[in-house]
Structures are given as structure tokens and as C-alpha cells.
Length: 105
Image (tube, rainbow, N blue to C red):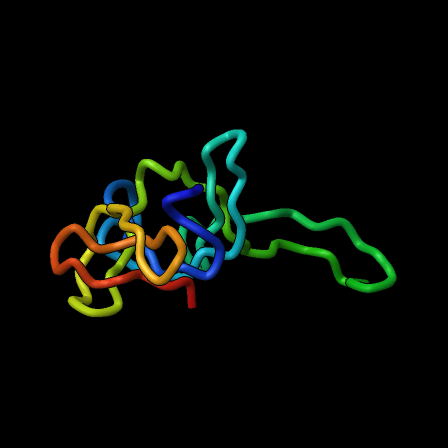
């Protein structure tokens, strides 16, 4: 099971966006990368097409290493590490700071 999942709110631990937070849009477990909403914006030069007749420069999110992310606990609102516990018939993720359960939102 993955520690960080699509839909989680994460905080950035290092890099140019350190301290910012955002929602995880996509995860690539094979390469240990994630796409976070409005974080690590890069410029992409788009060619003219029928959908975009003017073309031009577009900003979009770039992939980040999962090791640079920490999940934000919904209960204590702080970045924390993730633990596991068996509860309610299934394995659940818990916050290591406050011991609250973390559900993907």
C-alpha cells in the first residue's frame, strides 16, 4: 500500500516551493514521482492546433519526488509521517503526531 495517494493534501519539504501545500493529482509508483496541484510549475511551449489556434507558453505542474512530500494530517493540520494500524476490519493510515486516522479526501 502506498503512503501517499491521489487526493491527499501534502506539504512540500524542500525545493523552490518549500512550505507550500497542495492536493495530489497523480502518482507514478514506478518512478516514485507525484503531481501536486499548483506546485512546481514549469513552462510548456505549445504548438498551434485547432483546439489552441494561438499556441504559446502554458504553465503546468511538473512531477516531484515523493520523498520531498509529507502528508498533512487533517486533524492536527501539520505535516507528519504515516503509520499503520488495523482497525474496523482493514488496515488504516494514521498520523504519527496525533495518532488520528488519515482518509483520502
